[in-house]
Amino acid sequence: MKTRKMIVAGICLCLAQYSYSQERMGVTHSGHITGQPPFPVEYYSELPNPAATDNETWRGVSGVSVNWGSKYVRYAKESKAKLPKDITGKLKGWKGEKVSAQLVIASAVDLENVSVEITAPLHVSGKYEISSDCILKGFVRYVMTDELNHHKAGTCGDRPDASRYDSTLVADPIDHLALSLPVAAKTSQGYWVGIRIPRDALAGTYKSDVTLKNGTEVIGRLKLELQVLNHTLPAPAQWAFHLDLWQNPFAVARYYGVQPWSKEHFALLKKELKPYADAGGKVVTASIIHQPWNAQTYDPFETMVTWMKRVDGTWMYDYTVFDRWVEFMRSMGVTRAIGCYSMIPWRLSFQYYDQATNSLKELHAKPGEQVYRDFWLGMLKDFAAHLKSKGWFDITHIAMDERPMKDMQEALSIIREADADFKVSLAGTLHDELSDELDDYCVALRMKYSESLKRKRRSEGKITTYYTCCEESYPNTYTFSNPAEAEWLGWYAAKENLDGYLRWALNSWTIEPLLDSRFYSWGAGDTYLLYPGGRTSMRFENLLSGIQAYEKIRILKQEWERNGNVKKLAKLERILRNFDEHQLKDIPADRVVEQANLFINTL
Image (cartoon, rainbow, N blue to C red):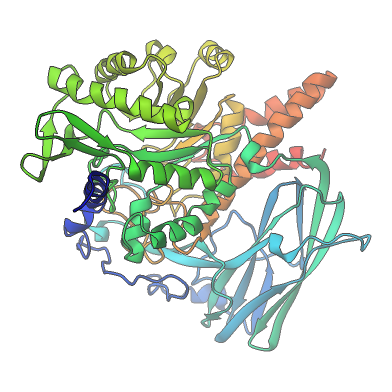
């Protein structure tokens, strides 16, 4: 006979898998690719390039040229990349910082098996070497993208017909798994080099040799110099920047064709979400109801909490999946907060298991109705007791996303009745009158907190951040965005004296994200920053650079304020004023970011 615990666990797993019975596999959306597992993981071929070879740029070119490019440029595959003549790439960074560069191969002839070898960076004294384990390297692969809405104002709104938008291949995924690649004639190919500088490294200059080969034939030699400055960043887990990128474990289960919450699933999640933890991710994304965002992603968020109505009409809640997920993310180093979504879902429908009929049912209720209050009050009281038993109550937030003011007030009254000490977070519209109730407040880039509100919240130990979404044309993290815009985001948080940044989708993958970043709602790349296989991207690596800049600014400001260095503080404030989103259409983000980095890296 099955025990009560076994029955509940089975129900919970059934609910977690529910979306996969909804014929989501193989759904066709006009103009977009579709398919079923197995999807590409280690090795794959990119989609055909819609753009014709730009023969004009290849006129008079023969053989192969290699050199350092810019980490802010998505080099067009079909065009001859314009590169400087200096074969030495130069990087600067603090101890504990991850620095990045991009080299480019431009070949007029077919290359069958290109590989890149980089020697471990050696200090000029010859007494200290940065281990090769500290180097992230990989080909910058090409993925299908699209463009802004036709009126050039963001990408909000359904776009089911890809033919209405200009679709091209664009450089973005960083493929550390492909040890070599073929490069076709008249093709440019980027290659990413990232170095995480050890916190105990000696200050000074380090040198590396970079050798590019086609099979055994050497096709290029470059130099790399890394100047390690005499400043130190703390470990990412100690960074002050509040990074909240919503994780989607359900996308990982679907992509790999594994059972949600199985041993295999968690092994994959460890690989896929490591970049988030390594970037100082602070918040665990937990879905405590079925589809809090009404299936806005290809892989909907299922409930991590089992809601069961017993035969006698009382309620029982099982937190088996929730606990395993939170414990896993905490083991990864994401320990600052847990965001539980959502008391106010986008579709006001709540799924539960009805013991009397042995079936899943839905309750349709909205804030302000007695049935809504009764549904949530009992659960929140039970949830609070469970969280306290786990030692997680003080870091857990009942979280809402872009909900109306009236609905928020109704939900808050229920939360406070359940437990007055519950923390609450909101990513949505700015309402000063809600601030006192919100421990974590995040508003859209276009909304500006008052200086007095920011000071008040900081004095109370509350988190105050901002987000970008499909509304913004610039800055953004689409696969067609200027990669420097991702770095710009961290600088902007420093300028506005905010605690960090939120993005609604870390890995809500499209059907085949390594091949096609287009989605049937919003612009390409809007739904994810990381690629399968634990791959990062040009966007994610530049976002990390912006977070590190934020930490540098914080440390330097403290130092200069302590020393009374008014001159440097004034110069920093002048530089930060350049991070104005209204200028980005005319002044590219890379120009602003490069000038700012020049200042904080020449101290």
